Length: 105
Image (cartoon, rainbow, N blue to C red; front, side, top):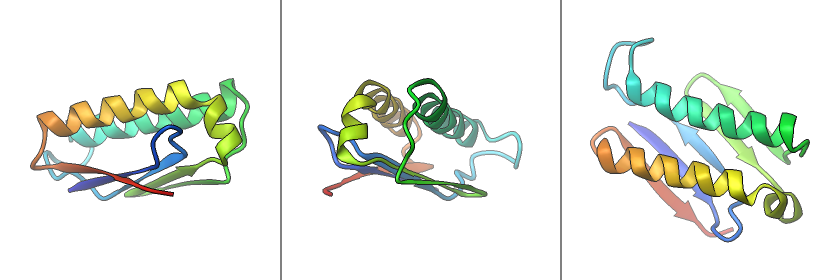
């Protein structure tokens, strides 16, 4: 199961994604691909387009974590809100394979 933790709302400070969906074989799992693509697009937009340096950015097999300070999060709020909307939509469709939680920071 993919577990997505969203750090706060309004502003969202970042996210952590752990695990694998187990929906399909490795390299062919559409849920893992969708979540990974959304996470990498979000991280790349923040770092390479908006030019914000995250407090934390970890990208490993089965783990991705991105966390911003509050000032940077305000600057990146639209992209982070879009990420939250996207993973929540995926979770609605694939409840057995992923879970989204929101933690207070």
